[in-house]
Image 1 (cartoon, rainbow, N blue to C red):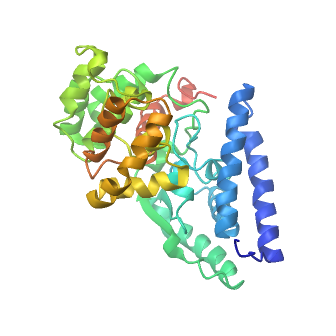
Image 2: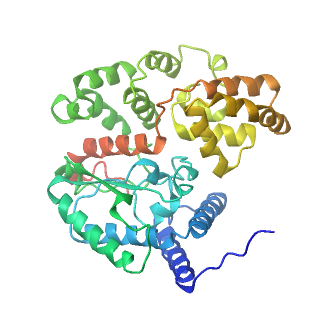
Length: 364
């Protein structure tokens, strides 16, 4: 029998308050989602995250972080999108802690909410970083007086943002960058030496032109290849992307199709473990860490059970073996998709900024 966990009235009220705030945020953030299946999926995802937060007793931490961001924005402080694993949390999106919608971009919430005490990372305009810290510290101090030991500013990482002037008046597109304006954005990122060379530098911009991205997903793939410097993979992905290699030769699973048969993101590792080998959402992140750290003895021990589960899920031994080999040989430095997504979105917003006053690229 599990021991009975006593929940204080204060924690219970924190959990209830967080659920109410998230419910309000959900109505605002997902007002344009009309498909019943999508709304049901979003609801399940939010409930899953809230249950993890409730079990860890961290509801007040999320409320405080939301308050910090709202205060800062009310004072006109330029804040970035809110990146790193934090962008994979639907609760953070509903709380306006991040402006990246993890549901639209298929980000794995387990990458963030399963951390015992997660770290919140923000870019803040350079000239007002200290002001932002003061706001954060005052709210953390109020929480500390309530004897919550996990409330300290080590949970908050702040990086100076060098480009607030252009971004301040550009609104985040509600539907992302997959439609209207993406061709113009791609053209600017690849060719505009004066405005966008800073994003990748001349070497990176030349590589981007050779890569020849066509869609938003291609920019994500480029970011994942260029930043950790997987340059040897770049021509391989490019050849497949432009149809020079038969799809049958590299298409192992639907989760690998957007990256043309290669594992470029940590979220793909967890997704494959879950869909192919039946690993639970919470366990997939721990197993991902073992894979990236090359803990081969531990992996060899659980492999028979994983293959048995994959067979029950309809995968042949050959299919499971191909995917397993792809998993255990993944580069150690493979990045978080959520982090790449935020960087690329910022680049796209910068590309839109010159046109912002004309409302040409602001996609409401």
